[in-house]
Length: 421
Image (cartoon, rainbow, N blue to C red; front, side, top):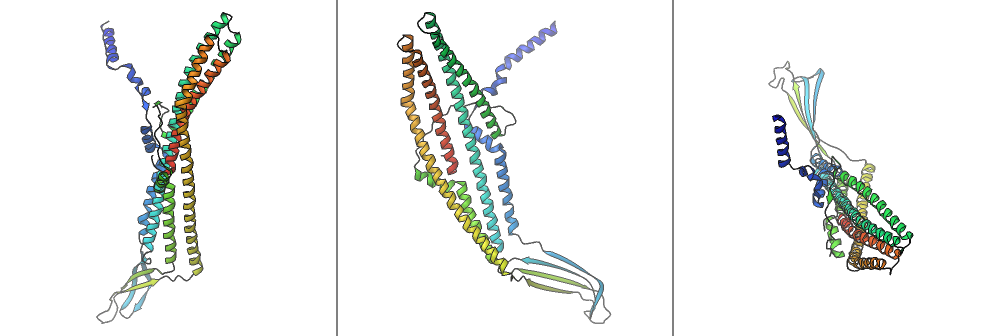
């Protein structure tokens, strides 16, 4: 008995000091956009892959600027070569190839530009992931709003069905009104099922981008349209300075120019310096230099005489340089077009949001209230009331869809120009 009382006191203490709501506190957490972006940039595999590829390319720079390995030689004479001062027993030597001056520097600059290009690709991948996070976040916000609005509309239609039922019971309205209200209610229930399924799909997409080990994803914050006052000239300037694709294309022109210069220097010879030491055995003479070892130095150059190969290599590098310049022009034209296109779309969405907020939403709400009052008093038929309810639902959904499209367009424009706006 005493043991049972002790256990009861322990359980009461646990309940008092460790409230049950703490167990579910994670489910009440609000997912903020900034935290999700940081999480994705730290954990997304494609971002990590682009980062490691860039870092690996940086390790190639010192490799390209270093001299080739020297050659060491050892020669053993199977049968000694007799000389005046004694027999040659073995020979050791070493040689070092030294490329023509400037060649190593050009190789280093070319590899540095290649690494910088991969860095810009890494930054572009970060921008792509940020865009994906924002798109998924805004879509989840819209689905949540659609669920909330549809639930409200379902309650409205439920009340409408009750009014129609009472009017039918008093022989004021036909049974057809009741049936139409029930059909409309079923359609809203079906819409709710589809919206909930859509949210599950969006949640899975978000978790995939975040690379989370579990499928836990909580509610999102309310999204409000931000102010956008950029001019086209400003956006073009920002894109030319920040767009990763443009910067990478510009770096590729520089890299191709270094490669072309390097191909031109292939017409000039490289130098190989050598040294050999010969071990001479004891001879049979009385000369002071009897058995004296010998050494020698050597200088060699390669002779670039195969001009067909050298000419073809130089023409190849020139063609790559020209292609890089054309590629930059092509990317530049595409980026500026996309900037113009998204700028016009953002301004259009901005006007649409203002129109919904100041005119359409108040008008449809007023129209719905008037239709409801008219139906209850017998001045408006059921179809007009039902139609006003549908218009109100579509208008409220369209308003939040315009906000989401506006914010997604800004997110897309940020990826086009390569930085946050």
